[in-house]
Amino acid sequence: MVTAGKLALVLLAIILFSACKPAGLIYTRDGKIECGGNGKAIILKNNPAAINPTFDEMVAFIKADATDYRDYIKSGDNAYVCSDFAEDVHNNAEAAGIKAGWVALTFTGTGEGHALNSFETTDRGLIYIDCTNGGRDDEENKASSRDTVAYIETGKRYGILNIDVVASSPYDYYTLQYDFYTERKKAWQDYQNRLKSFNTEVDRYNKEISGKVFTYGSPEEQKISAWKEELQEQERTLERLEKELGQYWYESEFSEYTVEDVLIHW
Image (cartoon, rainbow, N blue to C red; front, top):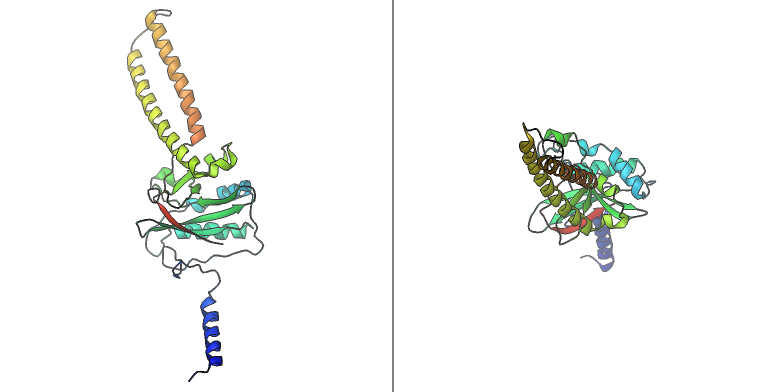
């Protein structure tokens, strides 16, 4: 028979034991260890001296860090997936004296999850960063940075924008709002439609002038000259839009999923 005093000691020992978790390991909400693509546990190496960065310091670190250039490998002993990308970005940031978070996302209606990073910037608040190089498998993508700012709101679809587009925007705080992402996505779609129409019009123009000579000042020459000037103006507008929106539109493989839960491990 266990006395009340002994029972209290046993319960205390159980509580202490259950609260003791190995340093560096991180857990899901239901207590499972987070693992990388090869099944090994994710280990976060925190630096006690690390501090929260400014927005510009965070951007400079992310752009200098080469994790985003690594290949995304789905399976096998050398598997390297989103959880591994986020682990390396976190550990590299902490080693550089920058406090970073490892973020776990779950989505509505699917068992799939996603991992990325977070930074609590001193001047622009909490920012999510996704450096996973898994959006496209072509050679162009492998030679391109995939550093992106992630836009996360529960109940809304997961979104990302190239970090250069966000950093170069003059709108400051608004660039980190979810509405900024949706506006940019619509602007990119409009830009693509305009570019397609422009290229079609250029083809028509080239066919119209092919093999022909126009007399200067004639109605035909004036019509062709006005057409050319209009195309040149459209080209300048499209070049401005490309500079503003970025050369590529990046989509995550999770961009069609709705965010259900966000868990940050600091």
